[in-house]
Structures are given as C-alpha cells and as structure tokens.
Length: 546
Image (tube, rainbow, N blue to C red; front, side, top):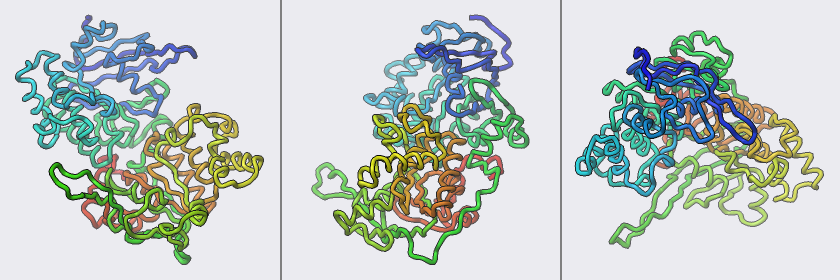
C-alpha cells in the first residue's frame, strides 16, 4: 500500500470506472477528482445515471463484478486503496470507512435481531468479544438515536419503522469509530420529518466524533442544507463544485442551474400561478365525515376485539378544476382516504359523493358508470404498469375494460394521449422496462386520462423521480388541468412539492384532518404545530431561499 500526502482524509484523483456487459463497455465515472477533509461534509449530487453511486462504491471497494476501476486512485489518510485485494479492503470497510446504504430493508438481515447485527461489526473488527459485544451494541443503538435501545436490540428489522431501521444502519456505520462515513441516499425513502431527524443526528455525530461525511444524494436542496462543499456530477463527470453559498449565488454550469430550479425546497422561482377554480358550481367530489377502521389481532390472553382507526372523521370537497393536496407522514391516513374516495376500500362510516351521487351506496352498472369519472395515478409507475404489455395496450386497457370504441378508435386514442403527455409516438410499441422513470409516469398519466375523467387521484406521483423529472411531470399535470379542467386529489408527504401544484392543502395526522386551507396561507401562517413541523422539515430552508 503506497502513501501520499495526508492533508485530505479522502482523495480521489482521475478516477475512471467502467462496466463490461453484453452491449459493450459503459463508462460510469470519467476522470473524477474529489477531496474530503477531516470532519468535512461533502455532498455528491446528480440524477440517476450521473455516476455518484458508482463513485461511492469505488471508494468503498464495493463495485459489482462487472465494474472495475480503469484509471485513477482512491486514497484514505495517505493510504492507497485502489487495487487492494478484497481481504485487505475488509479491514478498511467498517474500521476506517463506515457505510450507510440507501435501503435498510435490503441492507439489514431480516432473520437476525438488530442488536446481533451491530454486535457483529464490533466482533469482526476485534473491538469486543462475545460477552461484551451485546452491551456495546445497545450503547451504539442509543448513540444512533434509537429510543429504548435495549428493547430495540432484541427486535427484528421488520418490527421497526423505516426511520428506526436507518438509525440501526447508522449504528453499524459508526461502530468502529471510522474517520469517514459514506452515506448513499440515506433518507430518500423516508418522510420529510423523519429524514430531517436522521440528517440532524448524522450532523450531531459528526461533530461529536469528528467524522467526515461523503453524502450521496439526488436532491440539491438537501445538499445545500447539510454540506460544506457540493460536487455536481452528470454523465460520470464532475461539472461543477463549490460551497452551497457559491452555487446558490452563481452556479456556472447549466445543469447545476437546472437542478437548482427543479429542487422544490429551494424555491428559487416563485410558485406558479394556478388556474382559477370554479367554486360556484357543485363540487366534483365531496367527502363527508369519513371513517375507516381496520381490525387488529387480539392481545394475548384477551378476547376483546381491537381496531385501528386509520381515517377519523375526514371531510373536504374538491371543486371543478381544483387541486386539493393531502399531506402527512406515513400512517397519517392520506392514502387510505384516497382509496376510500375511489371506492377501492369501503368506509366504516361516512359518505363519498361524486357529482352529488353517493358512491358508497351504488352497486353494479351504476357504480361502473361513476367509476369511469375518477382515475388513479400510482406512486411507482414501474410497479403499476404491466411489464408484458406495450405502451399502446397499457393506455387502451381502460377503454377495453369499459368497451369504449372500436379497435381502431382505441389505437387512435392511444396515439392522441401519448402526444398529450409529450411522449414520442415511438413509445407506443415499447414496454415499460425500455422507458425511463419519467417516461413511465407519463404513460401512467395517459392511461388515467383515457376515459376522460373529471377527477384524478395522484398518490405520491413524483416521489420516485429525480428532481428535474419531478418538475416536468408536475408541469404536465398543471398543463392538463388548465386545458381540460381536471380536478386532482394530490397525495404527498412533501410540502415543497405540494406548494407548486395545490390550490388548497389538508394536513393529516393519525387519521384526522388537522387543517385544510389555501396553500399559500398554510405556508405563510401554519395554525397547527404539526403543520409547522412539516414546513420546518422542507429541505433547502437552511439556505434561506424558500
């Protein structure tokens, strides 16, 4: 192992990484130079395919079998890591470089208690023996911010929430006291308030332990809040880097400016002016005192039936041409409310009216006629689109289900809808796996519009997309609303996104509607403490531009 100067804790010089495959060689990282000083936070920002995760994998020595460093070096505290055999790299990972992966559901062993998994790191690096490791693991779980760490240590990953599981990964990452922690999208799957608490805790640990942090993220708003320096990557190259203040004040590269404009939390541009709403006529949809209860298992030794009230007395209306957003953390009841509105679930009590007709009472053909007028856009377009179908079949599927039009008319309708959502006609013969995430979501929107509905329920429609693609899809939804007078129920955990699209916003917590007000008023003067907490969690607010 060679040695170099040690002014930088981590030094990446001229790094090139390529993947070999049946379609030829893919150059994922191209000549990247990067340094991280002791105790510094450096954020690497870019969209899917930018090379940021491959860069992290190269630093950690975790490239897949098809990937290889073809040029350049990675050094840590003066020690060259490039070319180390796997056995030698194992003494570096965990001990000198900690790793917080993106998905704790995949990273944690589902059949081992979390305390055992933390203890394993300590024993692997000789920091504890079989007798002392369990107590040290409990202490680390507490240090990572888990409440009642002794109890949590005895639980399995599936018994913990997403935020709790992410804290377990943090405990594993800091177990050996590494000088550097690499965090790859550590909060992308979490609610905004949970994400803020996780990032706050990483900041606190960095200050307490003096650990440097290499933060991989697609969200420039998160980077401006948390990083000392930001490195922007595109197509495997570094296009720009600087402090958050430098990039916010005068980003030089067009791609950086595009990311800044697209990040909802930064709000570098004013929210768009939404089309006016027809409040004089009857509402398209009305929810009256909606309640939904789910049965719970009986407690051990008890015969008493228990229930969980997921939706508790929720009431609201949606006017023609209006977007009403429901926001809240996981478990708040927002998606259940959407399913009740679409009659995908039956309410325990209360009413749902579409154009004045109570859909909770109708059956048969009368229900089918009403059902055509309300359609759904799911969160994950890849999971919601049948992989066996070409786009033409996916878009026309609702038409076939309701026997609308001839085969030729359905084909014409598919071509028209694909054009309306700004996709090239060539996608009609392609399958979902051949499309990008943004293209798949546009196909999902086209399918939802095929029956010319009055109401579209959009359940987290952009949360799985890169920020610039998010902005494009939100702009498309707004254009369709202005042109066709569509009404939307927009479900989201992200108030920054909601600010761009919603006329009114309702805040749900524990199944109750805490407040429902015009969006601008809610942002300027939140009346409920929980609303204020959600607003404070918007990434980018530390930059002082939202």
